[in-house]
Length: 464
Ligand code: HEM
Image 1: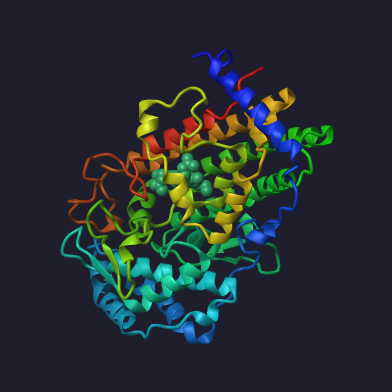
Image 2: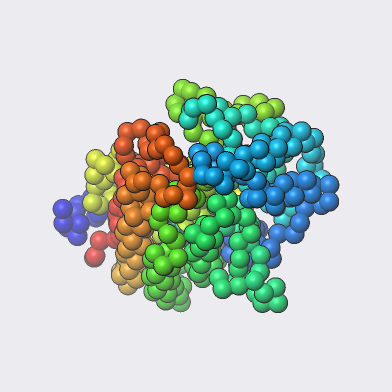
C-alpha cells in the first residue's frame, strides 16, 4: 500500500494535530524530569557508577558459596569426566545451601546497592542450584530451598524486580573495574560471575555493557526532550531536530556494537554452554512451574523467565521515546500488521519490564507518559519528519541485524549437535518440542523479533 496517500494516515495526522494543540495550550510540561529520581546516573545510565560493595558480614555465607560454585558445579546434563568427578562436590554444595538459616534481609532495605548486590548473589545461587541438580525427567519439579527462595523474594519485592536472574544481575551489577583508578567504560570493565565460566559469556556481557554505555547518550537526549518547556517554540524544534539527527548516529553505532558479537561471542558456546544456565523455570499453561520456591506462598505466580537482553532498559527507553507500538494498539499505522505480526507475542516487551529494577521501569513509565511525544511533535512539524524517520529507520536496521544474529546464535543452533565440551551424551529432549526455535523466555524467536522490527517500521511518519 502507498503509505503516503493513505487516508488513514491523514486521519491519524489530523487527530494528533487536534490532540496536541490541546495539550500544548494546557502547557502540561511542568515539573522537571530528573533521571536520578529513577536511579539513573548522568554518566553511567542504568549502571551504578561504582561496582556494588560486598554485603554486610553476616551475609558472607552467600558470597562464599557463590565464589565456590564454579569450582564444584556443572550443568546437570553435562556427563563429561570432569563433570562426573565434580558431582559429589556439587551434592555437598547443595546440601550446605539447604542447611543454611533463612537470613533476615530487613537491614538491607535502606541501601539500594546492598539490595541489588543481595539480588545478584541470590539469583546466581538460584541458577547454580537449579541447573546443577540431577532430575528424573526434564519436566520434574525442583524444590528451591527456603534459604535462597525466601530472601530472594524479599529483596526482589524491595527492588520491584523479578526473583530470578535478570539482565540487571548479569550485566549491570556483576562487574568490577579492570583499573579502579579509571572511570567506567567498556574497556575498563570485567565480569565477575560467569555461570559457564566461558570467554563467550564474558564477551556477551561486555557487548551488552557497550550497548548500555553508548545508550547513555540517548538518555541525555531523552532528558533534554522531557525538560523542554514548550515543544512548539522554534528553538525547541531546532534542538529536537539536532537531537534526532544525533540519535540516528547513536543507533547506527549501537548496530555496529550488536554486529561486534560476531567477533567475540562464539555461537556454539553461546547456545550450548551459556543459554542452559540462563534459562528460568519452565511454566506451561495449567501446569506447575518447574521451580518450587519453598516457603513462598503463591510461588506459581512469580516471574521466573531468566535473563534476556530484552530486559535492557536502555533499549526499551529508545522504543518508548520514539513511540514504537509493540502492542499494536495504534490501528492507523501503516503498513498494517501481517498475520504473523498479529500472532506474535505482543505482550513480550511489557512483560520484560517486570524483570527490570522497579525504578528503571518507572523511568520508562514516566518517559512514556509525556503528554506530547517526539513522534507527535514531528508529526506537527514537517521539518522534523525526516530526522524522526531517520532515527526510526536506524532502529529498524538495528532490529534487522539483531534478527540475523538471533538466527545465527539461536534459531540455526536449535537442531545442532552439542560440542564435546558440553558433555552431553544423549541429545534426547534438548530441542524444543515443536521443532521451532524458542527464545530464553519461551518465545518463538523469529516471529517475535520480526514483529518488533515491523512495529518499528510502522512508527515512520508519512511524507507531507
Ligand atoms: C549473541 C547475541 C544476541 C543474541 C543471540 C540475541 C538473541 C535474542 C533473542 C533470542 C531474543 C528473543 C527474546 C528472548 O529470547 O529473550 C532477543 C530479544 C532482544 N534482545 Fe537480543 N540477542 C543478542 C544480543 C543482544 C544485545 C547485545 C542486546 C542489547 C542490549 C539485545 C537486545 C535485545 C532486545 C531489546 C530484545 C527484545 C526484542 C527487541 O527489542 O527486538 N540483544 N535477543
